[in-house]
Length: 113
Length: 114
Image (cartoon, rainbow over all chains, first blue to last red; front, side, top):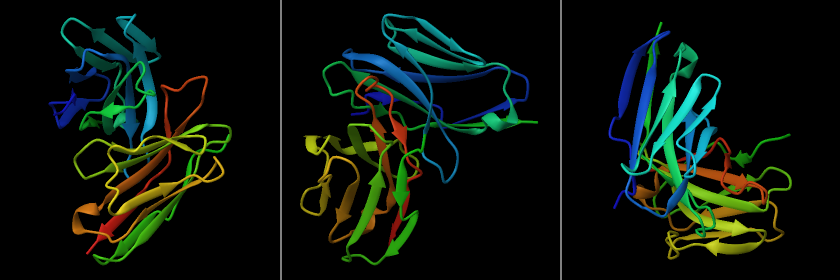
C-alpha cells in the first residue's frame, strides 16, 4: 500500500520555465511534508518542507503548496535551471511516528537548456 | 559541519555471502536511520535508532539483516546471508532532537549481489 505517490516518473521542462512536481498521499495522519532532491551517486538532499498548518511555503525559486482536502502537494520551481535536473522525492511523516519518513517513488526532472 | 559519512560506497558480493556497511551521522544527531532504496523506488526505512536504542525495526528482515549502534554514534548494518533481491542502495540518515522531521542523508552504499 503506497501511502505517498508520485505518479509522474519523469518530467521535462525548458530552462526558464516553471517545473511543477506533484505528490498525493493517502494517510490522513501525515502532518509534515518534505521534498528531497537526489543527484546520481549521491544521497537525497533536503530541499523544502511544509507543515499541515500551512498551505504554502516558499524558499527562493522553490515553493511547496499543500491541499489537505485533496491530500495533494506540489513543488513549483521558477525559473527552472539545468542544475535542477535531478530526481525529486516527496516524503511525509506523522506526529507520534517518531517522525519516520514515507517516501514516494520519485520524479526525474530534466531541465533542457 | 561534516555530513553523514558512509562506507564503502560500492560493494559487489555473491549470494549467500555476508556484507557490512558503516555509517557515521552528523555530530550531535541523536537519531539515525537506515534505508534501503531499490532502483526506481523511494527509500524504505529499515531501522531507526534513538541514541543507542532501537525505536523501530519492524521493516528489517531480521532473519538476515542486523544493525547496531553500540555507543550511540556510528552504526553498522549487516546482511548475512545476502540474496539477489538485496541489491540496492543502502542509505544512512540522521536528524537532530530540535528538528526531528528533517533528515540528512549520506551518499549511500550501492550493493550488487550476483
